[in-house]
Image (cartoon, rainbow, N blue to C red; front, top):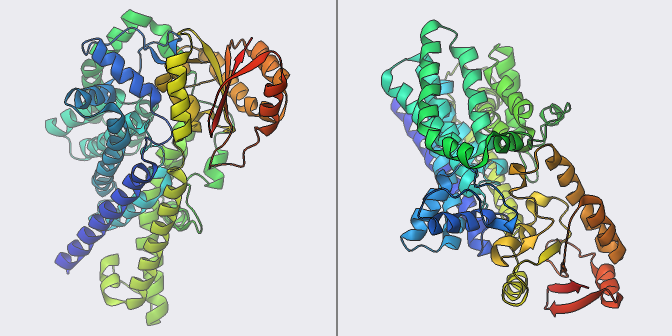
Amino acid sequence: MRDNSRQWSVLFLVLAVLFGGMVRFAPAVLGQFPINDGGMFYTMIGDLRANGFALPAETSYNYLGIPYAYPPLSLYAGALLSALGIPTMEVIRWLPALVSTLSILAFYWMATQMLGAGSIAALSTLAYALMPRSFSWYVMGGGLSRGLGMLFLLLTCGAVWIMFSRPGLRVTLLAAVCGAGAVLSHPETALHTVAACLLIWLFRGRTASSVRSALIVAAGALVLTSPWWVTVLIHNGFGTVVSALSAGGHSPYFWTSWLTMDFSEERYVTWLTVLGLLGFVIQSIKRQWFLPVWLLLPFAVEPRSAPAIAALPLAVLAGSGLADFVIPGVSSLVSGAKTAEADWTHLFMRSRAVKVVTSYIVLAALVGAFSYDLALARYIVPVASRKAMQWVRENTPAGARFLVLTSHSDPFSDPSAEWFPALAERTSSNTIQGQEWTLGQNFMPFLTALQDLPMCLTADPACLETWAADHGAKFDYVYLQTADSLVAWPSGLLLYQLRQDPNYTLVFENEGIAIFQRK
């Protein structure tokens, strides 16, 4: 029976990697351009190569003196692949999907350690593979950094769990290396990795030997990452790090997302979230509080990226809900007797009804994930915008400043505003990427201001003038997106007003963009 159980576990793991890989690569295939963001990394990879692979003091992205303080592991990976002949744009398009697919295997390894059963871990891995929040931000161009961070977070958590259960030098060194990888990949993921490891210590450690092991891991990670953070401190000082730490979006209402459980981003029926809630109830009844607490912890540590981290315990709980509640429940309903089976694979093999229900849940999750992909693939810089940005690069003064106007109210999901400084090689006064290293406490007010800017699309040019004056934004040109397949476009009124305003001159127009020079 044990061999059959292992075979079914392997099958579900293979399905997780296969289906998970499909939904992760689909957006890059459909979009034919990096998804959403990545423009800043595109520029930073070029800066790194131009500086002979030594970390520059600043990045040329957006020409705002942004410190080159971003964790550099993904940038070095991209620069190395670019130096080997792979175009940087293709690296940013495909590498995030590959790394996110590898994270499925890392998740399985971590879940196996935490659950102590590979069979339930396989179900959890399938839930993780198909949960949109587990890949949405990691297959984008910016996933070059975020995805590596997630991969190392999973490996670190798995290694630390083993270290506190079965201490040994090898696993301690593995935890130190993986922890350093998380720190060198993404700043927010580094915070969540530290928080998760502290939580694991709280539930699994609290002995003198575990404290010694934890200190070795921390010291090892500190030493391994020192070439980066020492260089950043020399170039930019400690204020740069403090500025980045102020951009996490902390709020006393961090717990509301945890209560509503609306962060999985599932389409249609949210089966995986429901299964996660069932798993939450089961773990609570058993007084096993690690996963429920981990579900809340990311929102207290760093709310901006918390949903993606909370997807990890939610997926583990979903596997538990399916294995410990749904499958035994369906088997009992069909047989008319309470089952005493200890492993869900035995019930799965014996009951056709269990197979049907499980297959339906997997199929529904897969359809929902592909539906999410179709929407995600549309978050690219349109061809008309790329042509307009090329015109800007070739026909405007090097020091020109632009207001890049689209109808996207979320500055982190505005492909044109993010890619404009990279492709046009001009300054965008309303691009948020990179500003976390310079604005400090002013980062969140600037974010709020950017969210208000699209309201000017239904107003006159005076709205732009007022907004710029209120927020200290200088601009010489207005880059106005006039067509987009994502939204019903509201820019017609502003476009008409700009055409009539004597203070603005139309200097470029194509099927999707109008550019006005401000006199």
